[in-house]
Length: 260
Ligand SMILES: [Mg+2]
Picture 1: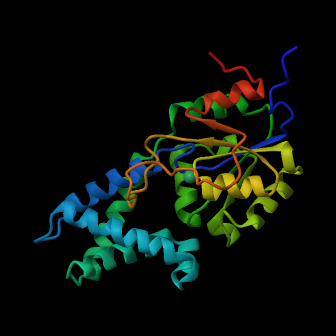
Picture 2: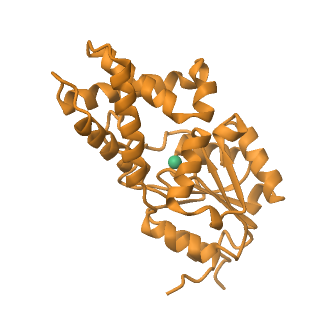
């Protein structure tokens, strides 16, 4: 007799959003390039701007949660988006805050226009919806994440939506997972979490005892990446229950039939 699939007993499934369900980094990279081409900066090539922005992004993202910008970032993504562009321009010798605003606004628009659900995400959300409670746990500013959900038209799939900007705290803080357990009314191995980030999704979910599925996509490369590759699993740390290249692999573990 074959063993029961591992996830049969799951009572709720939570998903991360960016680069788990939708093409965030591809949209961000193409959107920023389009923005700097639409609002050219005299004496500066697109490639020079993008390279310096990636350097500044790495630093800014690292410092954000402990800086005074974090409180603003939680509610309004546009302010820190512009600030990062302003600091990029300044490091290239250009002091023009108004120009930074124009580039930042254009970048926000161009990125949002390019956001799409991955094909496997569409299949999995449609297959699971109505069979068991689904939730979203996403980091980022409240306004940006709400806009993404609206652009992707996915709110109807989810019984629970937890956004860093609305909670005031983001993954990997364990409080986020505890809030999700309260919303779902279950905990531990009854919950499956599906995410693309080892450190922000898999580790905090495993630490509170949830089942985990790590989705690895070739497109999941931050613009500030120094390797040009998706995040690697460190030598130490919890192993995900599943590592998948396509979200549809999860369905077979849940014994939910994929609709034709
Ligand atoms: Mg993500």
